Image 1 (cartoon, rainbow, N blue to C red):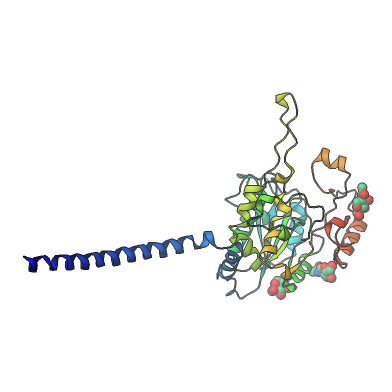
Image 2 (spheres, rainbow, N blue to C red; image 1 turned 90 degrees about the horizontal axis):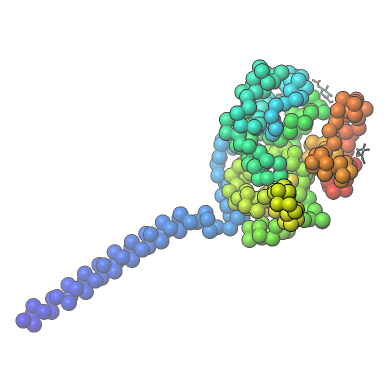
Length: 343
Ligand SMILES: *[C@@H]1O[C@H](CO)[C@@H](O)[C@H](O)[C@H]1NC(C)=O
Ligand SMILES: *[C@@H]1O[C@H](CO)[C@@H](O)[C@H](O)[C@H]1NC(C)=O
Ligand SMILES: *[C@@H]1O[C@H](CO)[C@@H](O)[C@H](O)[C@H]1NC(C)=O
């Protein structure tokens, strides 16, 4: 009897041992899988930038051949100045540039809407409804950059509005941009800062928050950082909401909308992202697009926030000459000093 009893606990111990080993192995496997899966979610924003930057993406390093400038038009509907751009592009080699347009979804650039064949069919198929002052504005910028990155020949990326006009001919702009290994991004610390939202602080620290003109010119590696960013963009989407218009139907005015909601992403996103990615050393911290924002506050309120529009009457040859002198001067004074950054 005793002989029969003794092997039973031994078998039991061995079986228990195996069970333990199997359970442990399965747990370790699951743990390893979970770790792999969540690595990106739990890693710090900085390390995710390094991931983006180290990604061998879209053939940028392999590219050999004549580089192109990608002209990215972020427009409301049509291109009222198409005739002017047509003259500009007629003096370029077609192999030196590409054009992408983000306009209202469904709008077509063809013979019926555009006076220049350069723009036909150049509207993004995946364009979105853009609302001024909301994150849809920077989403549209990212869509333009993403489409342009598909062509490895695109090495410089110029963001333009439907109100922009070229002040120089194509060959001048081409050599100016290709000669610079840096992006042109107006970016500074606003001492009167009111748009930073404390709720962003776990990811975006206040000392990394930047402001600057929306109109940027990027080198390819910076365009990739913007398109690959999954962290900072989400923070802007979550925390930058435009204040709702006053609801007069309730008889009395709404309480004043929270100021920190109104953070105007297009004047902060690229600048803040590049500052967080430690890329400010690779920037010329000025814009190549001239704008004047000195309209009186009351005019701003009634017409909406918009810089001065140059018209046939106030943009003669003398004015254009003055603007060119400003742009070619030494440009270190920031936006907040008023009247153009290079004065
Ligand atoms: C382009 O503009 C530059 C500077 O304004 C000028 O020197 C050059 O001759 C122009 N080139 C052509 C092809 O018109
Ligand atoms: C087009 O690109 C080539 C190669 O980079 C350059 O030599 C040429 O001057 C460019 N043409 C114009 C009109 O900019
Ligand atoms: C705004 O700035 C421009 C360019 O410096 C100047 O010509 C204009 O007179 C200014 N307008 C106002 C209202 O200050």
